[in-house]
Image (cartoon, rainbow, N blue to C red):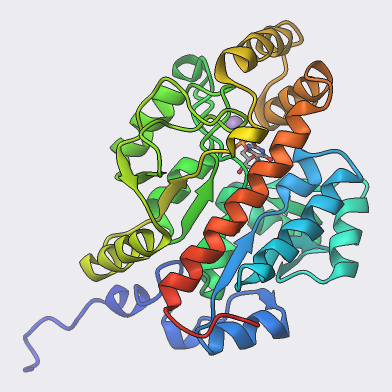
Length: 333
Ligand code: PSU
Ligand code: MN
């Protein structure tokens, strides 16, 4: 290269890490990965990320803690290592211990942390549950590519006016993590959520289904764009997307088992009622989802919570199978 030829812009180096504006060698993300998770990742063993907003804001105590333990056990039983992600006193934990989980579940006013809040919580020493968006960011920083949750956020009903669109959707478009969920709750605008994901280029896969699952309900009236039959197929799609150099993640929608579901039409009656309550009480912003969930719990006489736990467990089992297929070797014992 002679002196007159343009030297590469400094930004070409700076792009070497997808989440960083610094060169890869200098990039050491402020996360604390547990020894067990770090070892598994080093050996390319299957690891599944789990979120913690479901613990801090999605379910009441003590069912939240019991669920967190249960899904970790389910994950191990299905030969993958669980890595629950959350923040305690400004520390981003990837792979929380029993004591840490208890501290988070018992913490008096945990934050609900999405992409917008992570830096604040880190700098200010706060504790909180990570939503799907923040969990994806932390999982990607740790090198985890499969993540199980209950339901994702989406376009809220009336979102065309309120602009209430979950940061989860944009995160799926930019961060390379496969998220296994039971679709999205019917408190959201499901067709607009699908449209938004399509616009942002996020693949939405239906696991053994043609219909978008709606969280407590195994099927909604809307069709899911891409159908898959096995964890191996999902792992192959992850591989193909990586080879194509495509940004972003994928959404796998996994229907709640039939025995645990509350059918769509039955749920719709309750959902319409709580949405009206939220409107009358002028609930907005981050408070909307927790408000709707707690009202639905009361109105469904606890059935929504039983279904919620069943679907998270079902998602963790599928995520573990995908992680095993993706690593293609050495499941944990
Ligand atoms: N949907 C659920 N349960 C939950 C959440 C969503 O059925 O607990 C949580 C997830 O952590 C999700 C977040 O990422 O809520 C979305 O919140 P918002 O709609 O404010 O973006
Ligand atoms: Mn919102």
